[in-house]
Length: 121
Image (tube, rainbow, N blue to C red):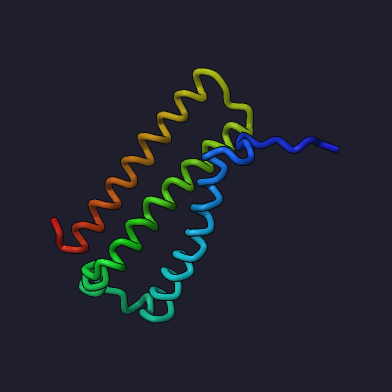
């Protein structure tokens, strides 16, 4: 029988954060899907409606947390998958930094869009 291999050490911070962010994303994604597919029909979603929702601090904070959590969860998951495939050495370091920079840029751009939609900038 093949031995199970994981780049996450059970109980490590990366392992814990991957699970915590997954649990958070399940609930926030369900909220997001329900709100934008059942409460507001997709055909009725407008820029003005989105700005209105984003002007509510609770919705704004939830969406920014959703963005940051999803970005971390995705980047951390891709990195772990690459480590599981045997990525080591200089390539491991290079990929880690490319993912950190890409994830940071994605989060910054997403927060910028959220701030514009909120009317703060």
